[in-house]
Image (tube, rainbow, N blue to C red; front, side, top):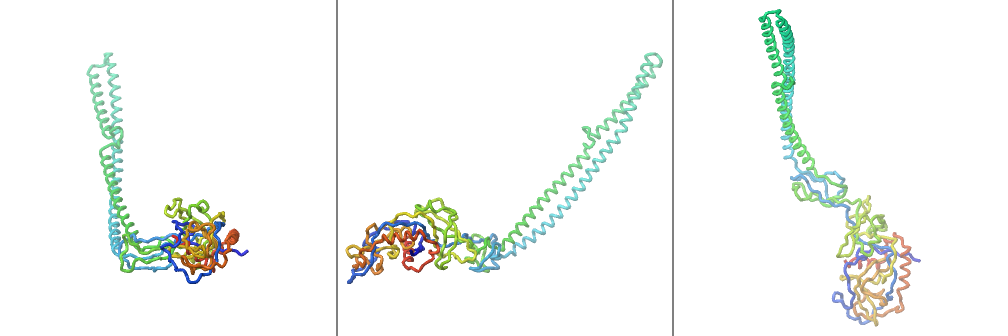
Length: 487
């Protein structure tokens, strides 16, 4: 059995957005006057067949990413490094913006930084001096306190001796062993010793408020001076940090003045010239990432349950001959387009040799689907018109034209959704010479499509994708073109 080949089809050959009503003598179609001589034609009877073992979608190749590169720095363009069509790597310079003002600003900021660094160092020296003064104040306070402890101890010993003397003489006086003058002298000595002790204790207490010899005014003053100096250092360092931040920002702007490509790709357009202005909302170049590339497809709602994310497909491009590419459906929009009653799918194709170029028309074939019954006709019966695909039927040797709404196109047959019915006698050869109402001479009135349809269905079941590249049959091209123009 002769292997049948897939017909590259437009996406809308699977999804038809609006119905095209069939009719005879449409005002939008050219009406030919009956010929003086009947046109010989071949016909086939329209019957139900099978279709859908695989689906072919047509879409345009586009970059996987296209971005307009905008300069973050405003200014005059002094250099342009690329032209449209150039291949670029991520980080490669595209244009250079003038940095004269920024470099002057940077020099001023660097001078401010040096001045502030000197000021910070001077204040840090003051902190060191204050800290040394604090340590000296602490040492002096401790030494003073220690020096007062010895007199206090001596006064305590003297007080204890005077108390003991007084106690002894009081006993003697009570016994009548000494005169009262001796007792009075001992009492005076005791009171004197107690006064000296109290004075020494007061000096010790004054040297250690709250029992802490470092809790004195001289130490507190030195501590306050240290804290003040440290606060000045912190403020100066904050200013230093702000100046450094300004320098970093200016250096960043200078670096960003060399505008680079964000991705590996191709320069689609060079949007500025030397002497032009960069910045604001205007782009300096447009970069397209073409490895990988992608094809956007519209999947009809009656097939969305069969076409899933991650599904492997075959991609062919007529302009590149018989080569095919393995690809995968990377994303499917879960929200239906209410106008076309379809779901957008994205096919991602690796393109390391960059043979696939944006703008090329690609045929994407999904195989392994379950065939379904449908009203099908030979693809070679279609005639392309500005209003869409049409066919001719014959009744009483008179041709009548019908605009069609098509479904799937597969191999040599197309699915008819609207415009024909089973049993219609369809012109399969000679239709290019016909107009509405033309007289015809049917050369095969007994012709039937049922045998052809069965053969097509069998051929499709064993179809291999490599056949999708064949464009030898002009009738297949017409079918794809006719379906595509229904958009």
